[in-house]
Image (cartoon, rainbow, N blue to C red; front, side, top):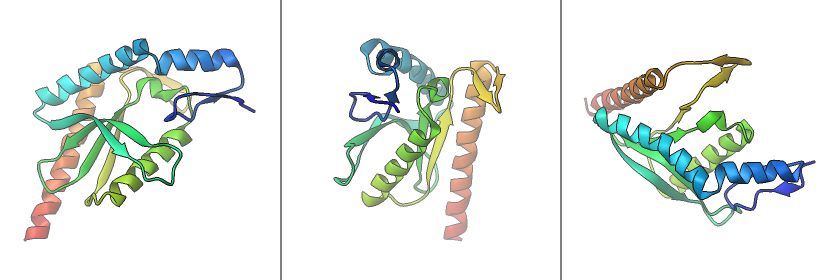
Length: 172
């Protein structure tokens, strides 16, 4: 049982020990934590700009009244060159180890629902980017940030090309 709940209204984190909750709060909800996280996001913003991709930062998505959370903040919305699509880029520092994947999946579902209810059409894609080392099947993988950023940009560009090709096919 995890009786210690994070006081942030947009966070589902709960801990069994009060010290774990304090550590979580310091790591994710203080000004120092925000600066640390924004530093990684700023690096990605520079990479997107250098690659000529258009985007908006800190996009707020308001939830409907039926949920206990009011909104989500998306790190980046990257705009495709072709037909309308909603491409959401999340900077997942340290693979979001402080909470389970189910929280991220629920958040993505809530965001998609809110966007659809607001009238957003076209495909909605999530790009999840981790600027740090990561684990796959229990094994730590290490690549340079430059390699990870290049892969991210290549993946976003590929999605934009697919959107553009789909738009041309629909017109023809």
